[in-house]
Amino acid sequence: MRWRDLLAGELRKEHVGQRLALAGWAATRRDHGGLVFIDLRDESGLAQLVINPERAPDAAGVAHGVRNEFVIRAEGEVAARAPEAVNPNLPTGEVELQVDELEIVSRSEPLPFQLDEENVDEGLRLRYRYLDLRRERMQRNLRLAAAVFAAIRRFMDSKGFVDVWTPNLTRATPEGARDFVVPVRLQPGRFFALPQSPQLFKQTLMVAGIGRYYQLAVCFRDEDLRADRQFEFRQLDLELSFPTRDEIFDTLEGAVAASFEALGREVPARPFRRLTWHEAMARYGSDKPDLRFGLELHDATEVTRGSEFKVFSGAASVQYLNVPQELSRAELASLEELAKEWGGKGLAYVVFDDEGEVRSPIAKFLSEEELEAFRPETPGATILFGADEPGTVARVLSAIRNHLGRELGLIDESRDEFLWVTEFPLFEWDEDGKRWTFSHHPFTGVRPGDEDLIDSDPGAAISQAYDLVWNGWELGSGSIRIHDPELQRRVFRAMGIGEEDAQEKFGFLLEVLRMGAPPHGGFALGLERFVALLAGEQNIREVVAFPKTASGSEPLTGAPTPIAQEVLAELGIQLLPQED
Ligand code: ASP
Image 1 (cartoon, protein in one colour):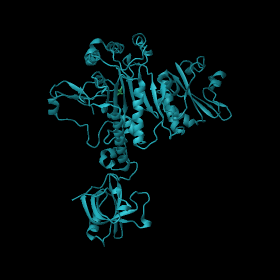
Image 2 (cartoon, helix red, strand yellow):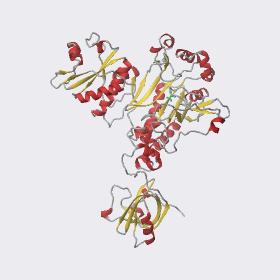
Image 3 (cartoon, protein in one colour):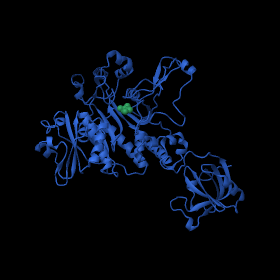
Image 4 (cartoon, protein in one colour):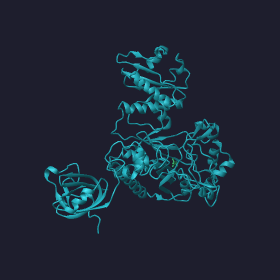
C-alpha cells in the first residue's frame, strides 16, 4: 500500500477528478452538521479533507474520532471547491479531497500547547520540541538553514575548496572559552577536549599541502549562553595557502552572496565596506557596529581637559552621542540604568531644547566653550556623555547607541550592512591575569613591520585579524596566520607562555611550522548566527532544532544527567560533593 500519492501542499486544480491518497497530521477538524472538514498537514502544507456521511459513512464514523495532531491517511477524489468556499490564502485553497476512506494511523495525546498558539513559554516549546518543530515558523527556519548550507557547500566546492573532516576528540584549541572535556576509559586521568574550532588542524592541513580547506564544522565552547551563543554551533571554517587578505574577503563575500541568492534575496553590494578597528571604536564604540543608522560617537576629551566638572576632567576619555531629540526625564533615567548595566557610573546629559535653551544638571559646571562644542546643529537634541576609561566609555555609549537606534526607529530595516573590521590589536590586556593575552587567538599574524612591538610595546602591535559584521552582529573572524615558528614563539612569550609551556601545549604546532609551512590564513563564519539573521530571528535557538536553554540544559532529553557510579569508576573519576 502506498501511504500517499501526493504531498498535501501540492494539491491543485489540475488534480480535480483524480483519486489519490494523502497522509499527515490532522491540523484542525470542524464538524458542520454532518459534514466533517479536516485540514491535513504534512511537510509541504495543508489540504482540506471533506468527509460526507452520505458518500462515506465509515469514513465519517472515523472522522468523529479524529483529534488534533492525530496521524491520518485519507483516500478520495479531488474536487474543485465551490467559488464561495475558495480560500485564496492557501495554495491548495481551490480544491479539496472528497474522502472515501479514512484511517487513523496514529493517535496523539492532548497537546501541552496548540500549534497555532502564540507566545508559548520557551521552556515548554523546548521540552516538546518535536511539536514546536511542526509549526510553520520552525519548519521554515530549518529548511532555510538547509538551503543556506547547501548553497555554501556548492559555492565552496566550485571554488576548489576541499571538505576535510577534523577530529572532535582532540586537544584544547584556545579560542577564548572554556573547553568541554571528555574522559577516556582506556586512559583514566586523561581527557580529550572538544574543539573550540578546528583552528590548528586547518593550519596543519595547509602545511599538509591541501591548499584550500573548508568544513561546516561543529565547535564546542563552554561559555554562558546568550541569544547569539550556544555551547555547540557550526561554522563555515576555511583556510587558504598563499592567500591575500582580499582573496579571503572575496571568498566569504561569495559565500554570503550565494546564500542570499539561494533564498531569492537581493544580494548585498560587494565589496563589503571596511573599517579599521580603531575607526570602528572611535566612531561607534564597538568592533561590531550596526551601520544601518548614524548616531556616531564624538570625542570631547580635549575640550573637557580643564572642565570644572570633575567627572569630565578626571576621566581618561570623554565621548558623547548627539541624539536628535529632546529626551524626557524618564527616558534619561532609564538610559542611565542601561549605562550602569554596561559598567558606567552614571550618564551625564545636556538637553538643548527647541529654542536652543540648555537643560542639564551639569550645565552650571560647563564653560561657554564646552557648551558651544556640544551644541548640536539643529536644536531639539540631547547630548549623552560617557566619561571613564576608554573601554568603558565605548561599551556604554555603544550599548546606548544600539538601544536608541531601535527605540527611536533610527534603523533602516530595509538595509543590509555588511562590514569588514580590520587591523585589530594583536593583544589585549588581561586585568585579572595581569598579562597580555590574545585578542583573536594566539596564531594570528602580526602586521608586517609591527614584529618588534611584540616585545617592546605589545599593546601597540596590530594584527592581521579581521571580523565580518552584519547589521551589528559579528558573523565571524579570521586572520592571516603566523607561519614562522620563531615568531609564534615570540607571541607565546609575550603572553607569558614560557618555552616549556609552549612546548607542552603547542609543541606539535611549532613542529608543524618547522616543516615547510606556507603562508596561510582563513576565516570562520558562525552559521547559526548567519541563518538566524537570514530568517529574521533574534535568537539562534529559533534556527537550531534542539538547542540548549539559557542555563545549558536540553529539555527534551533532560541532558545533562548524572551518570552511574560504575561508569565514573571505569573512567577513574570521583565526584566532589555538590552544593545544591
Ligand atoms: N578559529 C577562529 C574561530 O573559530 C577562526 C579563524 O581564525 O579562522 O573564531
